[in-house]
Image (tube, rainbow, N blue to C red; front, top):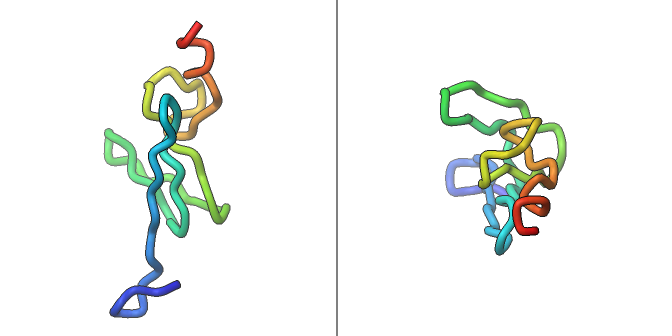
Length: 66
């Protein structure tokens, strides 16, 4: 799907108690301004700050709930 100027639309879905699911992105920019290339149609971006693979979610939020 493309936007009004031929750009790809990016969709972000908040997972309750989990990551942000990002669809359609070509890159993600982290809090330090570093750009991370996206090579999949959907990526999970960490929101809890505990991932060992930032900015990507690695499931650590599940351990925090216990």
